[in-house]
Image 1 (cartoon, rainbow, N blue to C red):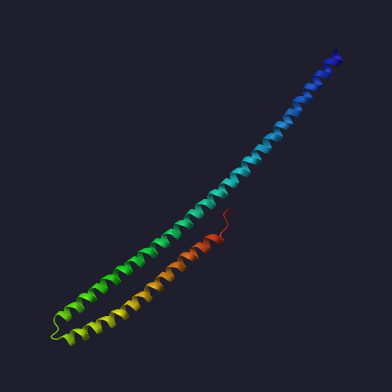
Image 2 (tube, rainbow, N blue to C red):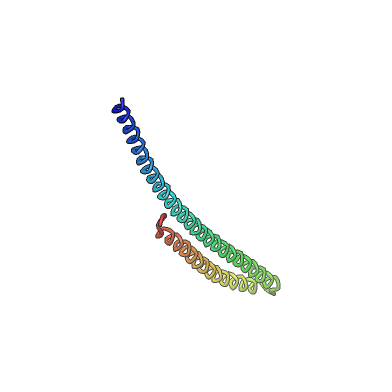
Length: 147
């Protein structure tokens, strides 16, 4: 009985020691997994915040460009309407049909030149605005998602 009791005690002690080692290894493995997960979370969060900031910058740039172009179109429309009214006022004070025809011809020539300048200016503004947005997008694409 003593030998059997000793074997039983030894087996129980061995099992307890083995469980303690497994528990310690499991604990170390768990701590390592939590630390790795936390590191990944921190990187993913930083990347998400960086991407959000970059996308906001792109949206702000696009919105600023849209506002600038809309303001320029409004200025052009106002300028064109004012030129039309000025020409109409001159024509209403004309003394003869040939004078009206001359004023109309001058108005149309000036209006065509002004329209060409406005179109060229809007095209240039639009091109620069598109380039600014494109540069921001390229800068965003150049950054890795997770550092």
